[in-house]
Length: 150
Image (cartoon, rainbow, N blue to C red; front, side, top):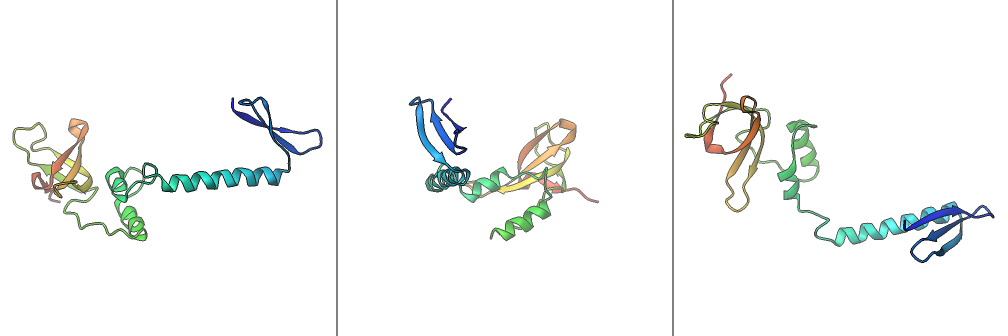
């Protein structure tokens, strides 16, 4: 179980630890307990900020962002407030495109752009497109797509 907080007969608080089966803190006011918790949270936050597995590079956000719960324009505004300048993508989320990938089931299909991103390593632009008829999304090289007219 770990530990729990109990109200003492004098109205103050104590902490009982099931690890040592004993009271480890006692005669705490509610404010003392709140401050103890706040200090522990601050210490944990400081440790987290030093942990490279906790704080990710912003490129991770760019890889993970989706536009289901915000519009592309909202993202561009928000990203700008964070100091990021969105590249001038040829294909933007919401654009309708036609796929030109020979010898592939997606060839000739139309779909909606979900996201454009730079491929790490090569720097090529990749575009994620949802094709409703095929009930899925695919990643295409920018050169395999054309903007749908109209």
